[in-house]
Image 1 (cartoon, rainbow, N blue to C red):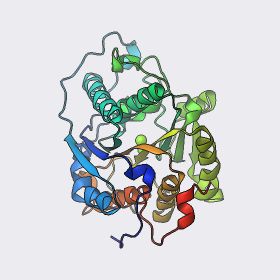
Image 2: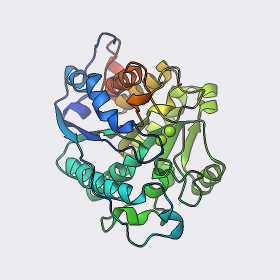
Image 3: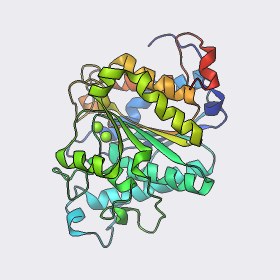
Length: 328
Ligand code: MG
Ligand code: MG
């Protein structure tokens, strides 16, 4: 790991950073992401954040809940993989995430596969509504995760969280009687996509989901593409939730994931995203998902993710005074 210079900005040190491990890997047929929280801790996540000036509390890992029958569920949703278990998880995650936000914490959720977002982001959306603040989500991922039970070829629920979060009615019973504030699709932006199912492609157009694919990144570069998004979010003073799926990286850099797709981000591209988001001063909650230590090579994917989180919290190679003054 490189030498650490720089400090986390005041927007991220004014609150206690709370790590919450979510060992859920029932969102697909590939087990192993349940070990993600342990691997991220072993790779040195908390000491790095403390070195950057953050106050860190580790809330531990959530214990697997009992399965819950979601009650009335449209017939197509009933065929989803592990529906009852994920219903139990979604409600448990939502309650804990909402509590952390209500206590003023900066949550850093350690997945777990991307199905955890149905609990985490729904809690963030509920919190933002109560605070009278808009929510924007940057979904850094090789996939759009915008399938529904009807469109999903696999019925794997880690490919459905954005449909749930934007209000798909067939998935609504997962949250039971807890309030769900649907996130408008244009306020969720998938960044780094390169594997999108045919039905998802149609839905992205139909609903206006934000989406930047790898070809666009190749052609224009990270900074050019992020700048207008951040400018718009700053003008609205949004709460920005960052959802980082390790499969956005090129598999040669991060092999520890069950859904590798060739042609992913380089080391510097991913760090530039995190550095730019840090500079924005908007980040209010974070999750790192899909790390599968069982598929990793001597912890290199876990170490890379910890370094990326370090950049999100202000680690820099050289001090950059302009970066602290909302350069956008
Ligand atoms: Mg994903
Ligand atoms: Mg993915």
